[in-house]
Amino acid sequence: MARTVSEIYQQLVAEKNTQPHINSLAPTIDDEQTLLSDLTTPSKVAVWRLIFYIVAVAMWIHETLWDLMKQQLEDIAAYSRPGTALWYQQEAFKFQYGDSLVWNPTTMKYEYAVIDATKQIIKRCAVVEGGGFVRIKVAKLVSGVVTPLTTAELAAFDAYINDIKFAGTDTICSSFNPDLLKLSYKIYYNPLVLAADGSLLSNPAVFPVEDAINNFISNLPFNGVFELSELVDAIQAASGVEDVIEISAEAKYGLLAYNAIVERYLPNAGYLIVDPLFPLNTQMTYQAYGV
Image (cartoon, rainbow, N blue to C red; front, side):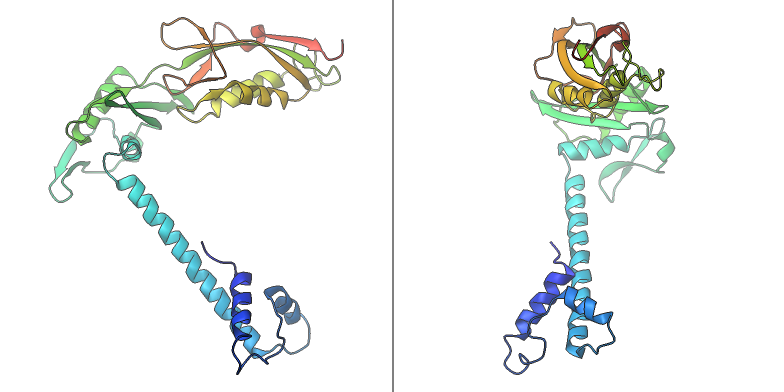
C-alpha cells in the first residue's frame, strides 16, 4: 500500500539525520506540515527541504501507480481464471441474446464476432456451487425492475453456457419469478409525526414504514440473504417509528407453501418481493406510542 507524502517526507528527514555529513542541516526535526506552513511565509526555506518534498511526492505517485497496477492485475486474474464461480458470472454478463458464437482458434474458445452491449440482457447473476453441479441464477431488468428471463431467452442462455463451459461440468441455469414475502409488523408510532394509518402528517401520500421495507428489499444484492434483524433496523429508522414488533415473517418460492423465516432467508430466485396478495398496507398494525 502506498505511503502518504507525509510519511515519505518524514522518513527522508529521518534518514538525513543519520548521515554525519548532512545531519547538521537545519531544522533537524521537520515534517511535511511544517514545511508547507513555512512556504506561506516570506522566510527563506532550505533548498534541501524542497528537494525532499519533491522526491516524496514523486515517490508517492510512483507507489500509488503500483497499487493501481497491482489491483488491476488481481482483478484480471480473478475474472480471467477459467472455471471459477466468478468467471462464470462474468461470462454470463457477456451473453448476447440472438447472436451466434464463433470459434476463435487463437484464443481457443467460443466468442461473439461483434460485441453488442444492447443485446447483453443479463443484468443480475449469481453462481452457486454444490451437489456436484454449478447453478447459475440470472435475471434481466425491465424499466429498472428485476425480471426473470422468458422461456426463449433462458433457452438461448443455457445453450450459450453449454458452449463456453468446461467439459465435464454440470450446469443448471435458472431464471425464476421472485420469491414472495408475507410480512406483518406492529408499529408503535409518534402521533406527532405519523397518522393512524402510517402516513406522514406532513405529507399523507408518504408511508415511511412501507417505503423503508420496500427500499430494504430492493437494495438487497442479487442472491443476497434477507436478514430479519436488518429489516427491523430499517423500519426502526423510518420517520415517526418508536418501536417495532414482529408478528410474522414468511417466505416462499414457486408453488410451495409459506414457511416462517427464522432469522434469515436466501431467495431461491435470487431476489424477492412483497406478495401482492398480502400488501403492506393491509399487514401493518399501527398504535400510537405510549397509548
